Length: 215
Image (cartoon, rainbow, N blue to C red; front, side, top):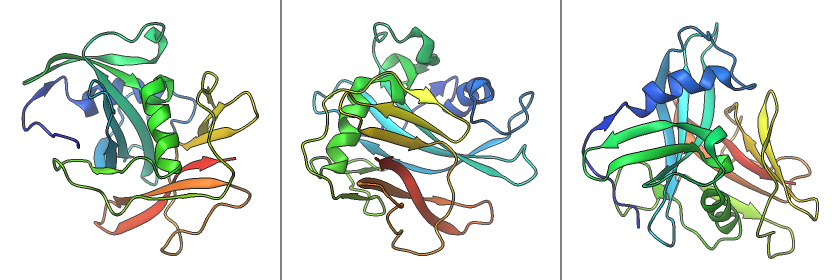
């Protein structure tokens, strides 16, 4: 189960994201000065206990209307071979020391745990409370399993990031989040699986929407 350390991280996650997000094709805000706040998210456990896995939801107020981004992140105690292009930066953790922070879509540990969640083999964890399941995160899988063990390199678009397996299965990460009109959140059209989560709007309203789709 996830253990959350009450300590410092320098630079902070939002500081790293403020430098990295404007370089993404799905970023819509002011590239000179993103105005980011944390809005929600959840975690998954690495079965080996080595890699931190977090799904951050951040609001950017530099757009005319605030834009909500989903940012999967992994935290490692050493560099991930071959993933230099996916590195947000390094930070000093008050307990764990230096951490290498990556766009989690490029980290096989995160991708494997997302597919495990879709299949019901992993349990979502609260973002900021140790050893606490997150019951606001829901999953559905109506296809035939098991899901592929490996996916090709992620491909970014203006709305999402797609990871495609050799059998044509697509794991889609929705980078721009939209609140669903109803709750429970209905399954996306033509999707064989999906993961939903919750976040707070700037006015404090709690909303739910789709984070991942399987096609």
